[in-house]
Image 1 (cartoon, rainbow, N blue to C red):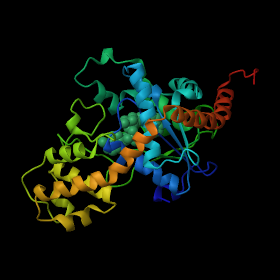
Image 2: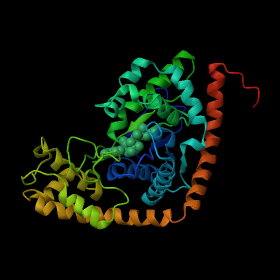
Image 3: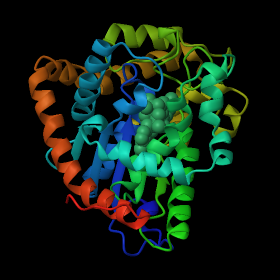
Image 4: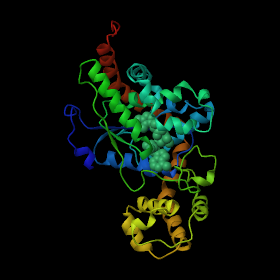
Length: 351
Ligand code: AMP
Ligand code: TRP
């Protein structure tokens, strides 16, 4: 178990440990998603924690998605979860829109969340930067409230995410605390973000100041989970770097964002610490380091890529798995939604 799992936590004693996390099917998944999220999802499942993993299609449509591609990307994300090691029997794997309670709880949270809190969300600012924010969807603005609903609908206590999602998990705690306070209950837990490992923020291969993202216009900036071995190797060979050799200590990577990123990726893929990686490569230039990284990336990613392809050949089976996951998720969500509506003062005479 991780430290975070063992941390005693005010107001949480009555909540059994339960993991929840989500990934948007708004494009193909990247190495950033794998190292920052999927790999951690599998580790928490394998530590024996009860885990619920969700492909958040309602979040994806906060920016326009081609309907057929969205369906395809949702199946591809499901295949990536399974290929990475999420076991859909032990854990729950489903797509968000099949459990309508997410949207229903999000509405209640829209009424708890303050505009001032939303205005502080940096991801909304980043996503609308340089664009006309007036033209962004209301859904994109309200997105963190839906994310809080995803998490709290299951009374999830631990949320493994990359660094960029920390603020949203903190907002989830604020929403839970305000709900509990306003209705004088101790109903929602104070969920902890779990942000661990060498790759909580994998950067673009073209620009060490930008996050590796499925929505970056440059395909060279990222490694996709669908890239073949030659493409992965070529992208790493062409990754932007500097002309210096690798230092022997992590401090030597300060102010060298591209070098730091490649070393972090190597560490995360190999399971070694940054110190160990530097001990191995100190004094060597990228002419030596990049081929070693490419070999490692191909060795780790190829089995996942080929398993994904195998799974994608049977879309009906993927849909069946998602449907089964949705039924099991719904069984947990319904009583929590019903109790929430009851607390808020809604008449519930039909159930
Ligand atoms: P998204 O692709 O935005 O739906 O993100 C899904 C999960 O992957 C979240 O936990 C993110 O924090 C994580 N993630 C996305 N991109 C990266 C990245 N470049 N480095 C680390 N984690 C990431
Ligand atoms: N907002 C997350 C992202 O873009 C995806 C997400 C939606 C999520 N709901 C969640 C992550 C609940 C963790 C828990 O990365």
